[in-house]
Image (tube, rainbow, N blue to C red; front, side, top):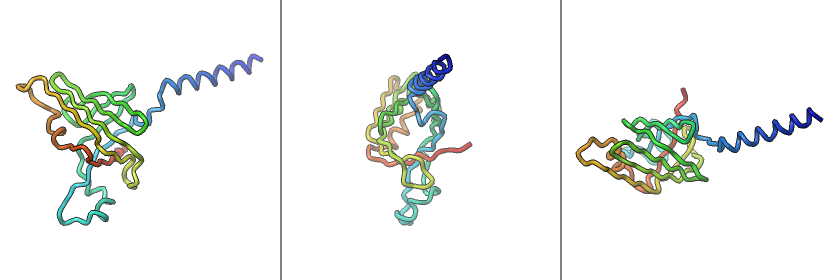
Length: 153
């Protein structure tokens, strides 16, 4: 009887811990967010399968606790992953940048996820201060496709 209780208690503990974890598939991983660099001399079909033809926008390291760091100076923030929508929320003392992606499993061998940027929002609170996010915001357009290429250490 005591052994049964222990097994049952262990089972509920595992269920509870996995529910608290939220089964976040991004936590602990680092990705280069890259887009196909358009060169007038390249063939779209063949070059789309070549990882060397992708230019990196930024590198994002997803941490536990729904936070991330990025290759942009002062590029820390939080993220949410709900169903197939990923929201990156960058914030520093002067700026807020929100990027929303519609994410799916990538069909490319070299990439983990493919994503379409569905929404961007940028706010600058002090126009005299240095901006770290403005260039990224102006580089991105809605409907831009990016590949999440995992960085293995």
